[in-house]
Image (cartoon, rainbow, N blue to C red; front, side, top):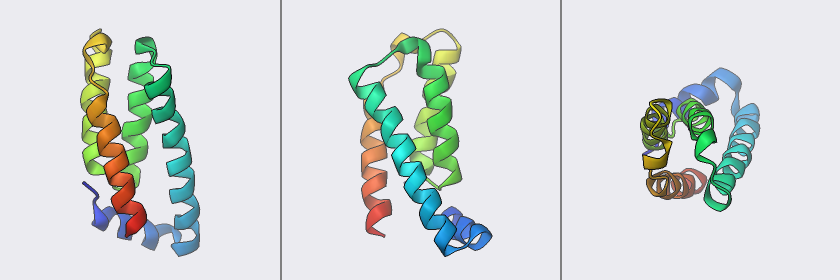
Length: 103
């Protein structure tokens, strides 16, 4: 679910204090996109939104979320946005967020 090696690598690269800021910003920005996707879904924006989530997630070690978002992004890019099931994305994000913030 979480690549703790990636988390440790990022902490080593930018330092503990900056990591805390990056993590806080990540959670805020991802919460906004997840909230929009849950409450006002727009399939025409799925490719863009899922690309953002995928990229953000991989940078902070949210590997399972990144994979799901990448799969959805590819479907949307092939004109199949209506077939993208966002529920696993939401569930994985909230589960990953819980594990990450408890760590």
